[in-house]
Length: 167
Image (cartoon, rainbow, N blue to C red):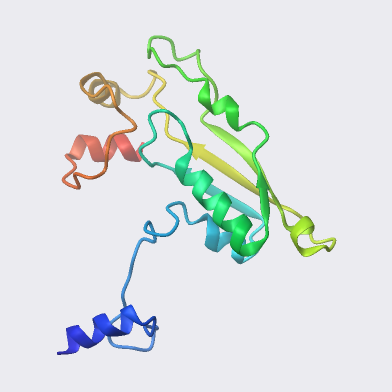
């Protein structure tokens, strides 16, 4: 009975940190990067590591977060050099080729609040395989042409795939 009651509390948004059971979610069903909550709290330096499956570098998770922040919070975010992330070492043959794996975005708090509040910045990191990583990562990538943008639907990661993703 307690479990059913706990589920009802969750359905109706009545969970809190005072109850015996707390429903914990990674939030991926709403916004996968955690950016929304940080902007809502008016953080001025945010580091986002986007490890979502994105082989075409369409930045779907980032676009989703930026859109929701703009609509719900009225805060605009610009990434003037986002296109540079699309230029990558697609052939994996030369680590010196390809663009960076990060970019900096600007959170326009001052524009949203119509005040002199200082703007914030986002250091946005995107997974990349360059070809100059450690031997075990290179070996894993050789057997998986989708790495590092493999699907996470299969949650049974091997030790090597877990390490490859973490690095």
